Image (cartoon, rainbow, N blue to C red; front, side, top):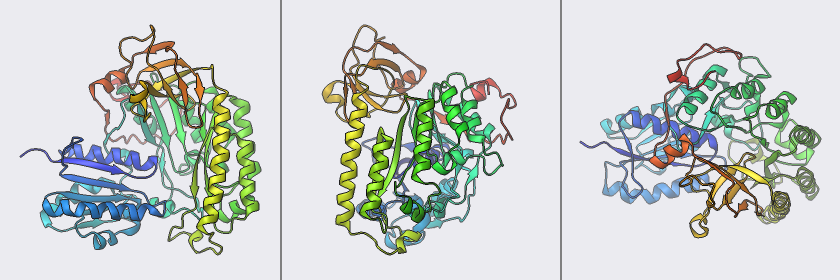
Length: 493
């Protein structure tokens, strides 16, 4: 009997993307193979998001489209996991009885067993746990990228933002030990990965569970000692927990990128209070001032919500004022979405859609103008690019490739010139000169100045993606962790 094939469809944040890597790793350990792009998978897994209002409609609409395929092929299995599964639970099977498995955010490690049980019992299996069963880092992962990897430092969230359903679905914050994080980073580097992004719902509150409020800055510095790790990023910090030691670690650790994504949500102090965001606009702007004093080249990005219940025109103008002063290189802007189960959903003065849309349009217009001005300032500057896979939608038409600068900006470049050593591949590193700045990207149309072929590029060219085993060292602190065998760590921790 041939191996069963799988396809994972991921919605939502970076946490979900990384969870999907864990799901893929487990399925492959259980004998499944990735389905080909044009093949018919034996298993379709949905890793869902519940943050936006249309998430429910999108999932159930997609499940509806799958019903004829399930009817035609009863052996096809459909599994639904993630935040929406945690929220809707058995309702998913009631609304879409052709679904075979429903699992939540706390038991992603159960998927292979639930699939086997559903096949054996010929009925849907729904398993939702109220707390974390297995820390995700203990699970194997099939990574999406040969050159860049996600590493979770924590799961869950201890904040109580009134618009957010994530704490109810992900649980309280739980932190990994530093040695576990560093071992996973080392395992990725040993596979040729050049860049890691440290993940947490509030990544800079890392250490709260084991009582070290300076733990995140120490972790950044420890990543600086990993040979072969060229770029370190992190997302997303909370302004209320942001400390000067993290700024110092960013500025003083060469492989930590001068990029900061820090959600603002609103520039109105009154709205921030209603959101239960425990900082005010002056505090936020002061953090940006300190970041830019330490790293004048830092690119700062953010999240902003428009139309929170009760937001007045004066409140919205306060947001525009903070945006003007902050000079964000880009911003993820959202229209407020009412989520059942959150305090904001029952607040008075829910704003009309037309008002929210008009404010949203003004915010986007302002932010685009600022980003364009900031990107235009970079024309003539030399940038180092980690070449990316398929980030430019028009690359095929323009004969360009795309890469990310160290500050996170997307750059489309022309892979030409005598400096090129054979073909440029995703995972290679090039230097180029910016020739044009647009609101959402840069262009570098001259010959590249340098081209460095990398092991990550070799792996990309060969179609190899890293696979990491679960890491459970449980080391208690920083400093010099116990030595790991070179073949296990890939670096000197």
